[in-house]
Image 1: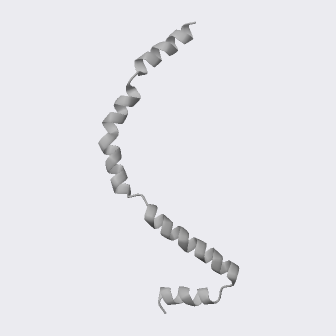
Image 2: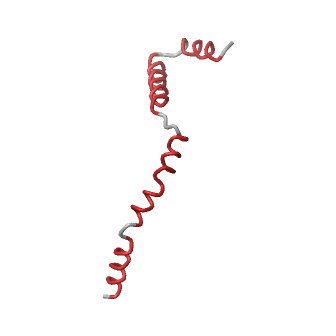
Length: 74
């Protein structure tokens, strides 16, 4: 018996509430498949914008550190 046949056979034995739960789960699986993130593409994007992100994060840090030092001195 194939997996598909096994699942179909098991579904035949379920009650209404269980069938509703199975239908919700199938909907979830289909949604997840449509919205899955391509991890390789995501890693590529991180790499592509890494330098820009670093520059943005570091911009203004000297002013911030200076302000903290002034605050500590008070």
